[in-house]
Length: 209
Image (cartoon, rainbow, N blue to C red; front, top):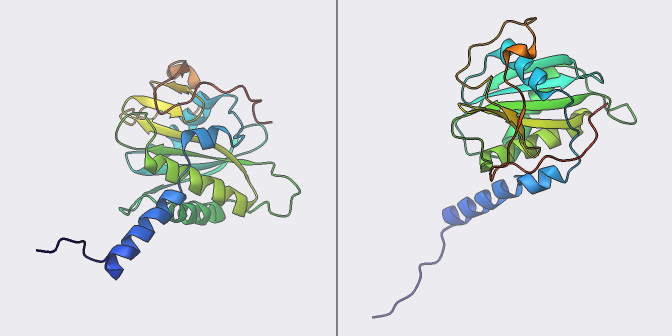
């Protein structure tokens, strides 16, 4: 009896190639932390404002553009399609929504506005490959729209956290009811540092100006 391995089929080769391509379009937390992403001066206020405006539920992405004073200049939300996590697909979706809500800044010598992404999902606050694909997509979409790439924030049942910074809080969470705009950030918990396996130690970078 002769033992051996069946040669790979064309379909399996395409599948393997596709998986490798998707993995190449993912950013690890360490890569994100080293990319010089500007810190939010008041992440709790930004998260609370986006939660109040869009009331995201799991699988909802909330994309916002902040001006130089960290005010929300434009925002949009959409539900993620049921497809494998791929930074290319996420980039295209983010770019399409950016084009709908705000003109590009490609003619400027340097970006003056910052895009941030809040993604509401199941699970805990630890980094996932899906998060890595969103990070890749956000960075690329910002480049193509002339924006500064800003924070990537996850919203789960346990609360929210800014990945790569170690800052987060218990409220709002994916189960929270939206707080009406104008009631102020006092309704939410204080920022707490996180040092789980999915979050880097707080980074010592200047806040975006």
